Length: 284
Image 1 (cartoon, rainbow, N blue to C red):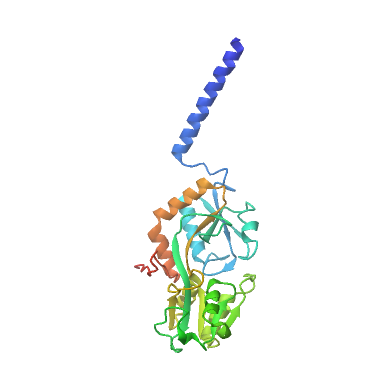
Image 2 (cartoon, rainbow, N blue to C red; image 1 turned 90 degrees about the vertical axis):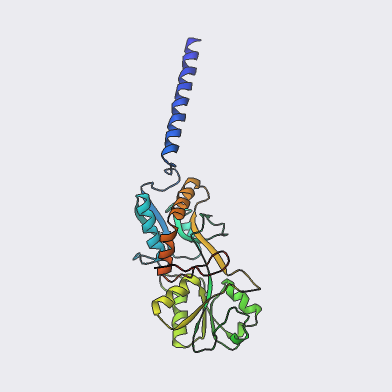
């Protein structure tokens, strides 16, 4: 009987010690060691050749954002690179080879999203010599007869079909191995060469190419479409569905560094939009 009481007492003592340890741990911050591949290293999933987002040389804005995040968290930085096509999440994040995708649209259930750190839209880019000044949407009748570049399978392709513009399009493949090819680069080169009159691209890509080329081009966010799928999306980071503490840590980083993130994105030409589809002007 005395032995039983002694064992019960030891169990109570041990439980109290564990509770105090857990409380102290929570006071000092979340324990991410179970969720992260290596709690001392920020391990990022990225495409090796997909500017303006990322590349192996660390030149994309998602690379720069990862640098900022690693510095704020006091971690070293490492990458798992995989082409941004079918199997990307399965072979990187969900294979526990890395812990975060730096840019992912909200609403896609392949990952658990953080809070968004920017909002942007597809854009129409037109040379100023093709007579499309003041164009606001793909319903504009002046687009008929123009040669329009589009990435196959992207949301604006549906709107082009709705507006009877399919005979005018030049389609570029969506699913490619970005290590060896780039549909977006080819489309922009065709636009500059006059092989197409208009290019429709995802906003960060279009804005980056225009800024880099320093060409005399109109960049029009497609935020006035009345039909078809939405064109504007919120972009956050992506983590595994089980990683709740890690998501909260990333949300804190996003909240505390809004201005620095906006300046980073603007430096790459990303067209930033507020929730009312109005352009966000970022002061130098």
